[in-house]
Image (cartoon, rainbow, N blue to C red):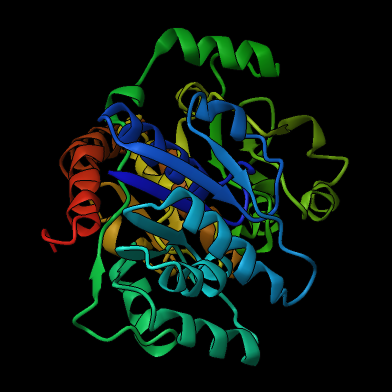
Length: 360
């Protein structure tokens, strides 16, 4: 089967890492996989190895020429399926695939998007050209029903899966990462992984952690993005020695091993891939109860709090820092939960069924 995955970019992020892994996994299974990016460049593109990457660059603002350029590419490649990811690829690639007479078009909605009025109308129009519309969580599916409106017959939920064997506790990695970052091996580390964007609200996490930080308690945020300066501004001189912003990392599985508690401070989420990876790494979770997060963080593995109140977030983090027994029991439950729910093979099988015109 020839599969074309269409993404906005190949920069490091949860959605992008998921598409990278899907492309690799389908390629390993013998399918002819191509990736189309609408921005060019991207840190992850070199990790695609032999998988062809096609740059079809979108101009600033609405770009009507992109429809014809994607149409030409699809006519050249003649794929069996085009799979678009999030809003911009949906708007442009779904209509182009239909015009190019692609046999199957699938779309995945990975999270919440603040549409402008014009973009919302374009997304609703493009959704009409999609054979199947996938949401990564029940909450995201509800948002799709209100916004893109695919209709119940074409809409399903497929939760993100991860290569579980890659994510597990590793004492050697734990010490190596801490030594690299200058963190004492016996310190308690609160950590988070994700793009530095407004939705993640890392300044909230910094404010919540500030009174707890010191030689014994450290904060690590792994990722890069456009709001790094805002996060830096929230780090006061008093706590700066105890906060580490690692920048983009390609060894997330090793970085997670250095944490004792994983925290998600987001104001909006679909189904964050990093949460599943943290669970598989034996980490207890503290997370804001937004988007699809409540559906995947039951009380035995973590603590959910409302978004926006640093004192409430701090209290939940402190509860786990102060109680090694609860940290351990939640971590064990989190790993067992991840192994039972987030198997990559299950996700891949469901997508391949949608890709097959006769299987869905």
